[in-house]
Image (cartoon, rainbow, N blue to C red):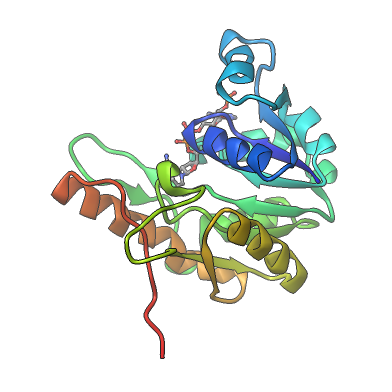
Length: 213
Ligand SMILES: NC(=O)c1ccc[n+]([C@@H]2O[C@H](COP(=O)([O-])OP(=O)(O)OC[C@H]3O[C@@H](n4cnc5c(N)ncnc54)[C@H](OP(=O)(O)O)[C@@H]3O)[C@@H](O)[C@H]2O)c1
């Protein structure tokens, strides 16, 4: 399976390493594939290809979006929605707004979400919100004393969510499907909870688990 990792920050690198680790053919997308930062990725993430956002979107049979929220619309314009039409697009972004000396807030919420906005920008793609509720260090092969944590996912396409669940299982997660993409309205605020706990305790290696009976 060929996958485009649209984003080269810590999340893009963690997920790209994870996809290489399960045998995927990975191209990371960036604004300038010839920059020093982009070329360094070849060493930082052994086995990946590097391309522009557009080249990566064309290359991938599916994609994962991991861009800074404020740059996401621009990155998707460079990728070109047509190159992602019909494809599963995992949305790992969070629409965070940062202010000095304060916890982040969300650029949109309550009646809308980043996940829904991404689905509107990519209206011919099958967007699945996933990976946004945990830090990049735990995204692949998370190890916790109480067993695998839960990754909550949301999206409108059942087959796309099945594909994402397969990936999450391979990465060591238990998946909890919470329904349509509007579920991103609650998944994105969970990130604020994740961050607040980290700021309060100084510990940054936590994840969620839903108890059921
Ligand atoms: N950090 C975490 O642990 C974590 C966990 C869960 C979710 N998230 C979410 O995942 C996303 C990625 O986070 P991150 O910390 O890995 O990296 P980041 O610094 O938030 O984003 C880096 C990526 O965004 C692209 N970018 C930045 N400004 C842009 C612009 N104006 N136009 C187009 N592209 C632009 C960069 O492009 P270039 O490659 O060209 O530089 C780079 O690929 C964010 O939405 C974040 O909220 C983060």
